[in-house]
Length: 80
Length: 142
Image (cartoon, each protein chain N blue to C red):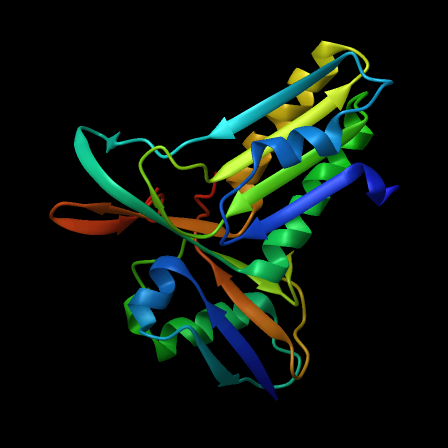
């Protein structure tokens, strides 16, 4: 299956993109997705203090992903 | 939840203090508490030239709405406005305004503090500080 991935802040800088499509096995959890992403982009190894949003809401590590989900990497926020 | 008591905005335009005030102002209320964030000219001893705010807009708006709904539920307040700016802001510019009206002042103070504190923890907005000699994402390495 394929998901859309949005990147923000320092993670967008580390990966060098704002968005990309990403292939994953069916029924991948958020936690497995994070492991896969770090394998694809080893520059994230030293940077794992980010949250993941799925379809515009914060998701925990056990959430199971679906085809065409929109994921976002949310580094520590600094609005206000 | 009655959303006519909530005003949420994420905009590249200049924020309006008057607009927030006018939204929350109500004859049933005895007070309005307003928090205004301003761009500071220094951080940790370094001179800041400007701050550049970027956001994940649809989620930022959802999270700001959640905060407003929670504030109306938790505190005895009548109306709340949460407005945030995007894009480059100069020293003294206003990145965020929170206005809350209530029958009594304590609830307005508490709700306003809750809203700004939670916004800084959950709303997907990021600022990049630009200095004379470079730039850095704030909070990127906590």
